[in-house]
Image (cartoon, rainbow, N blue to C red; front, side, top):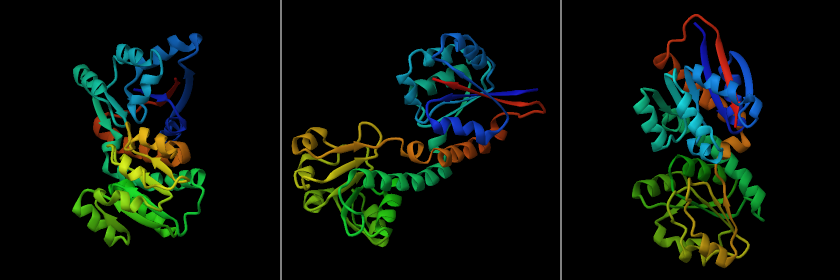
Length: 285
């Protein structure tokens, strides 16, 4: 029996996932009126579907969410990153198993590595200064914060980590960084030319931003709404770069490989592959 996989393509990362999964590949454009009906037929045939990472990307494309929810009649498992509550409820009510790729431990670790590399690219693009010997702040010391701080340190930056947790500050110091609580943020911001925020809460407050140099830049990689007081930054004319989805932007194929590996790890457990052909239907939206 053949197996049908539908991939909703929003970026190069989604497109490359199909290449890594293999099988017979076909592509249609949901935006073209002449291809809309075949797209719906593919969705109806799908044994499994791969949604974007994050799934919130679907909101930007008219009609696709309704089309998916109305036509996923044979789907047995869905994959996606940072799956929203609405989609989780839909899957549960429809009896569809789902797997959040961004909750996969191996994905999280590997994603942090390539995110750090992409952060360096953003710094080089937007900062007026060399990384070597530059005073830089990284807020938060989760996976992405830690990998970013360590990579910048390896490139010669003088890194200070702002973190609430005593455990995180201890870890940062053990890794060779200066590390303080956010209450010392204004003091540390003085003379800092680049701040990388990884915390999805407003931690870069007006008090911190007011101490930054006029030619400094903030690279905010935290998920929406980010962690920067945008009004304060605008008032001080400090540019804020909202750098979301960096792996898909800079290392699309490597990122796709990481996601495809996670999908393959789950596929045998969730879906019987069978003896037939594997079809990959890519729907561009």
